[in-house]
Image 1 (cartoon, rainbow, N blue to C red):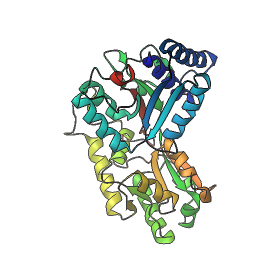
Image 2: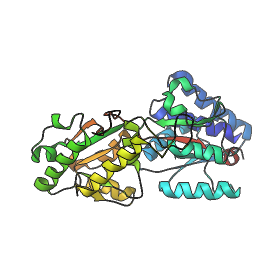
Image 3: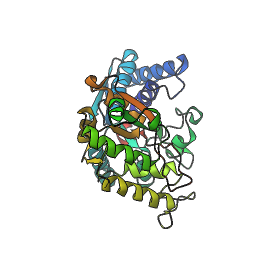
Length: 330
């Protein structure tokens, strides 16, 4: 019975961002699923969500909780904020040992980690095929959440990459908002050096333990760590090679501030220590947290790699929801 409630809350979660069909039919489906499960169980139940990022993921989960509980007041929903690394460690430990005590009912997983979990722990996640209409989502988002035609996850955000930048700092460095459009990484580094010299701040942050920047660069050239058949493709992977070279240039140029976790990453641009944030669109709420910087931010396309003819001013870095089967069925 609990599984029906999980499904209903997952539906509410995805509806928060408008990524599924969100008309009256879907809302009624969500409410009916929760009511039916509560009536059949005859007692108050609990659902637990694990996620990270208070400004975006947790905010969406809290909104989904409120939406869901309007129709299902007898279900207690616990939204737990955890660091992404802690979520990964706890999931791996519990699933590999077969111990489900303490696991959540719903957990946020990044796209590129989804297949690893689904193939390593094939019986540990709930079949969501009945509630996820793949036509409601971009194909690249649904490709990683299924195995042998069975759907296990609900796409949560698109993760479109962009360059968020401080318009005041860019202009103080002698450049215009037009200069920030359709950048190459060489031009980006040039502007970054001017920003550092004239404004006394870094251009961006880099976390040596997180290679998200390299992943975005690779995807801008249409490449990945694997080929079209899913086989590891590291040797002669030009997109990966070029991305590593650009990353090295960013480090060697001195325009990057080194950070080591999410809090330092967000703190750097909220405190005005960096002029740009090239990452997924989901960072916007975190940028908006710095109210003293209101009206000082612009958005431009993600930079492309100069020496890669396939690289374009577009990329992605995203994530999704997954549901733990053994936990939510109890």
